[in-house]
Image (cartoon, rainbow, N blue to C red; front, side, top):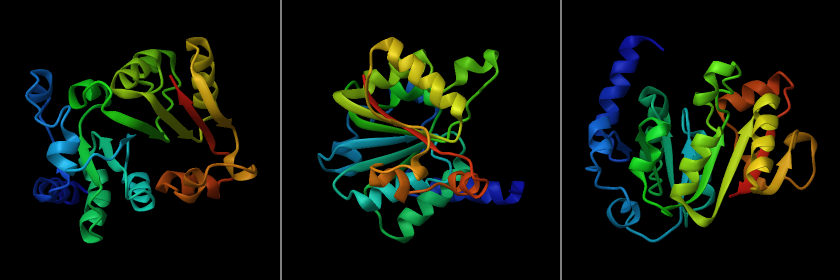
Length: 223
């Protein structure tokens, strides 16, 4: 994507009612008004809140929002030029139960209150395979603890990835932490009984991986 196109998208994001871009200082100093009040102030209903972390173009957030009108969805990514696509689609198609939040995942506890979120999806994250990149891996113990803090007591997590490494690493970590693994599959498109939303909604990257015959893995768990 050219820099002109990126700038155009950044400017458009500023005008989109479904895009929120809090400044880092606003979050760290506790001045973000939606923390603990997403349903009251933004969605204006009491429906469960579902996050997609590293949402990219927002295909999963949009797909889930269409499938589950009685849930509220928030796609989160630091790259606003990417989720511009999802935000624009939501506005064009009048999908009111989805929003997009531009922030870093490590600041997630500054964006949501304890127990405010019902589900979290992580779709095709960078596996950060090198050891020194472990701290950036979205399913490391530190990140899992952050997610646990904002989830309801029976809140669920979903990890969908093409990385066998990420799948195995996360499963091992979850077993060690004593998490309740509800479902795990290392090749969802070659199996029966896979939950519908796991195969019916596909991201841009997922379609690319499928064309290369890469197995797609999935884990569903509770803390």
